[in-house]
Image (cartoon, rainbow over all chains, first blue to last red; front, side, top):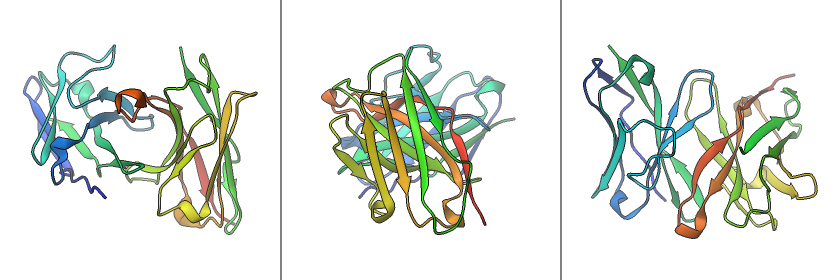
Length: 106
Length: 123
């Protein structure tokens, strides 16, 4: 089954672009979804189907998925984007999550 | 607007069974395009899949928990439930319910979540 590997932390200055990666063998053949989770809150879906945004999610959030890496891209990062981010896919009857990446806005 | 709300005991003794219910409002649990799922998050750790259930009762469970997990659905009350048996301190976590799908296009993502409920396993 899939094991999704995320870097534990990413730091970025306000206004810059943050890239959060999710690695697995041939992940590009799967649909990957991304969640934002702030302390004490439930996760919020920010990207689904590799590249699509739910209604209400800013256009600054986008995604890509190819080969062995899926990426969540956050443009023009704001202080309010500081959170944990999780990638997720469906594999052989189970929901699989990455270990999460803590995004720190400097 | 679809909403999910978890409920159940906040404290469970070791070796006993943890039982939670998720009430669905603003939509029907019999929507054919979605499963309904349980997830948990131990303190300071990441998200973990427990299982999902369809309104017909069909289930998928996390293999690592399958021997202790039972999920059920009550369409008359528009809710679904989780039972986790033989709990230990390692089962202490925030438990979330969520809607999973839409699977007719091959997507199994969680677009709507409950707020979560903290369950502590302790004597």
